[in-house]
Length: 439
Ligand SMILES: *Cc1c(COP(=O)(O)O)cnc(C)c1O
Image (cartoon, rainbow, N blue to C red; front, side, top):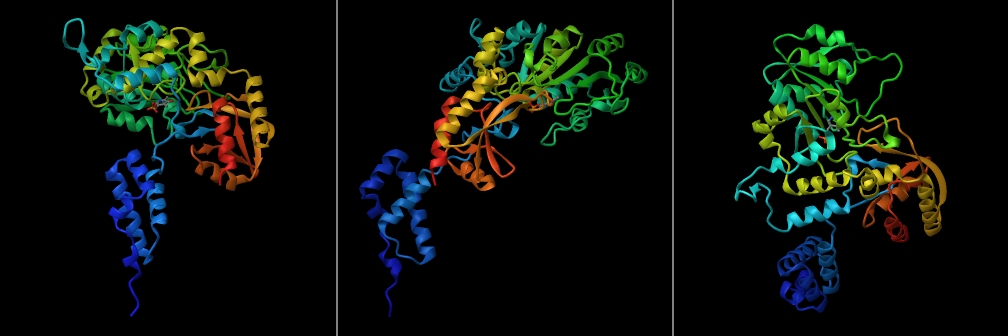
């Protein structure tokens, strides 16, 4: 009769007495270490192998040091507001503010002057008014939520007029017609894909019409034989009918950056007469995920009181980061220097080139000229002059870089891996070198 090899497997208690395991207990706590050891023993039993204690300890250690599912990556794609890579990195000021609010109690919904209940929606009113010229403003969970709650508050049960040229899908299934339906408003399409005139809007206005909606085309552009009325013309027509113009700007650019000229700002839309303007917090604003709503006092108050504003409310960490980001926007030069997406978009191309040179020296690649993009549905036609470090190795190398810690995400082009330096920080370069030196 042959002895059962599994009898030779050590016990959990015996493993816990080892020095290397004791070290793991200090780092991860006894409970997690015991679970990891049990899993390692279970695996050995399933394989029918009497694995030595060394190997079991190593397996448990590997389990415990497995990286979390959601973690930082190095963005070497050259797409600045990368939707799949978490969009907009936060400025240090925003991170610090969120961390302060996260680690203690806060006056989130507390009026410190009166010592009574307050509203989270009040923290941004003043700043938003100052930055956009609006009477008032608030933030919700994201811009899709902002559009939804604006429509629900202003137009549920009635009709909303929109141009056929603006019935867009933004990505990840965000379709304007679906949002409209969810808000309880009925969609009235006017014009054609490429041409919509003011008269097209005016001809459908009737007592049931509750709002005109304008949606920024975001991630595509129509060129050639196109026509659409200006925001001011639409706002005038809406006002004459006693209804609001709601303008979904998408990207949330607050100041006119020379390189991003063709993105409309909230201020210009409000000056043209929009009653409500909404935009994302984590596109060109460069803040946390959020949807910002600014406008005239009455409409903003109506939005704030709508039950969906409660369901779609912004959380305290995003609110703290958003306030800090908006404070940076008070000074456009400071915003461009401190907010990562704006810094990347406005950095001199010579700096990008110099970074590519340093990376190539470090890892032995070739420097090539590339084009970087803003991404996130903003200024889709804008090509930013950029440089990349180009490496041999294609898809295989790209996959290996994605497996490193932190993962490095580049782009593969014609069998080479391009590491675009517009979206890299100088501090990323040694991480990339380590990833390339690894297994
Ligand atoms: C990006 C975008 C949205 C959606 O914003 P989220 O913050 O992703 O919810 C809505 N409308 C427009 C025009 C956009 O560009």
